Length: 304
Image 1 (tube, rainbow, N blue to C red):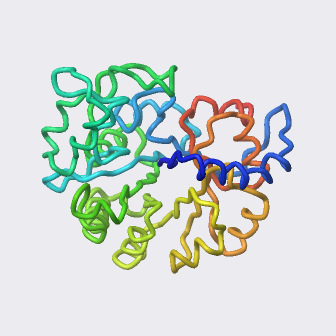
Image 2: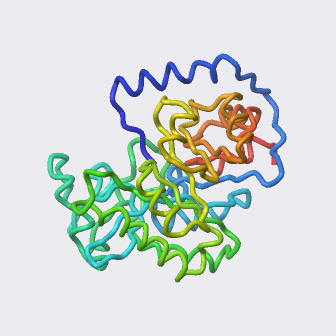
């Protein structure tokens, strides 16, 4: 998941977050974690290992509280589902075959949608670490297919759940990924082929992707990702149906929002909550799960 980091959007989110800061009262000691709480490892465990990589997903499994692995999808030219946050190679964390850096001005020239899945493996997206996560272990790794990740993970934890994001935008259709209806169809087909459709949630900021999923596979659980300040009712009207999960940036969460979601039978699972004090604050507000880069910090929340 991502947040578009413009000043106006950031300022709007800060204004929207004032109720959270004003009302939160977080105890210093452990809080009681509700039964069935959904702890999700964001991009595996981005705070600890290279994001969206096999090592990150396997590392996340070392924390027994983690019930769900969260990841993002792009599509290769041969229509393989590739686990990647961007539909290109991010120059901040990836290097070209041979080890040369990617000039920022050229980043979006290296589009996953224009490469075969086998060719993507030559790019290293782990050896240089991530400046935003200084504790992340540096390790050579590549962008895997969804199938590789699922097959590796279920050898260790066959009961794990999946939260899979369709990374799409209208302007990207046919250029950086297939038309959104085809993207959704590829995801549905692979989830069913892997036998995880009953254990997976598909999420997106793109209402078109969620609408396509809802039309093509109404049995698959959907989560509506939110990074705007338009409000719960406006966002649901825009989506056009009631999703199983409403998933906003955590600073947008309030008791009122939790009540509204639960009144409609919708679970509320915020992203991305990395500080223990904020995890405690979210639990006290009544959220149903938390997406975090740091599953190693979960133990500091409930004292276990």
